[in-house]
Image (cartoon, rainbow, N blue to C red; front, side, top):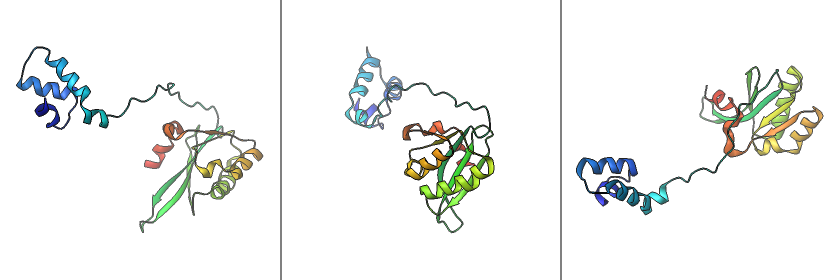
Length: 172
């Protein structure tokens, strides 16, 4: 077992069994190999635990422009290889995305860009969708959203994919 599992790179049950079948046979070989790999201390430590049960993901549905606006920061590099913070704002219904460079990722920068480039141009959003970044959780943003009668939806760090197509926009 040491030769076909431990010394072969800890390949897991299926590959270890396939490797053993190429070279050996003994009664109950499959059971023995599965048990050996299941109890292998190095495999147990390296194996990722099964994720906790989660509710199934559902698509976010919107019916009109500015019903849901998604916000996130993206850090890009300029031509001189300096980091540039970019605020990405996307209307979920129309898929219209805007990006504005910011000096930093502060609530003041978020509020200024939201007011100047989104609310004053397109009107107030019904809902804002953000992650739990301090720049989106501040009192300044809460007050701005309260004044604009806008409801804020926050997603957790482990469900970043729920922000819809925002990560895809960053890559393109």
